View 1 (cartoon, one colour):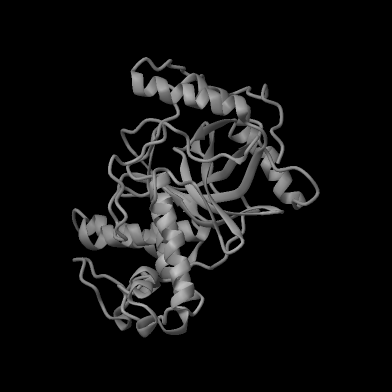
View 2 (view 1 turned 90 degrees about the vertical axis):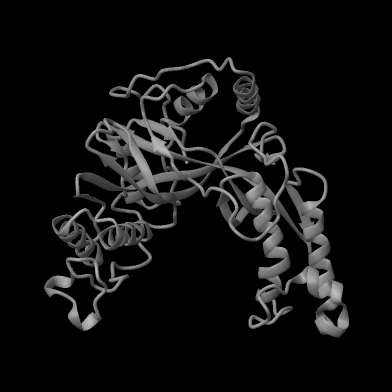
Length: 370
């Protein structure tokens, strides 16, 4: 990746900078300024995709309705398909609105649709670049001022918001000085170098002109495995560093023991490395000793406060502070590029509905699949 020419900003939106004065915000700003000073290279993982909606009275603002975390555009289109189908089933105001929603669903079942207007709203597949920043100590981890729960909750059920919940993309919202510096530094970010196909490089260059601004999404947190060749994402992104630690704890105690044959997949869902190791060899069998190692590693994650690195079975796992930027143009956030790879085709995801929102058997599907 190339950071390009920072000054290449003809046609960019004006930026409103606000200096934080409230103590918590000021501390976070000082933390961000220190991080900017330590920043080295930008490590780009690649594009991610989600869905945003713009209503009639929203002005330039867009609201994220499906997290910008999908690995390919079609996954985001499928998310929009489901969103509109359930809206037609449960929330349509009348038959006319339901027909319009189902017509949009029918298109999404057979076409690669990146934007669609229905029921007074514009829905768009949004493209972002996911990246992280390196420094003297490697990939950036959580900052001291990143939000943490006052009392850590290690239960495996969902206990908090997900990535991008209630996120509004407002290009006119004021930014702090540190955010402004980061946005300006990344305006010229583009794909370069021979390892990228020619069409990928050329589309990346065109995006600098068609979408000259960048909008930074809130930070997320990803578990990465460190090796001589760099960092490999293992799990994430998560809305907070603690959510990432919880995911690592779950992987160590529940998921990885099943994947590696230490716990049968058909075992009781509450069985994990902790419970079986505590029960001893009579219950865990020959895997008891190895399960105890998994449980001890998970206990290390829970010990103390803000454990952001774990060495286990010859690997080093870290909590990385991952970020995403959306390129922004005169008509809003950038959508998928022609060179973005789709790993699946459009297809029907849900059974047909009638005009009253009742689910029909597949044999009763109306003409055209809507």
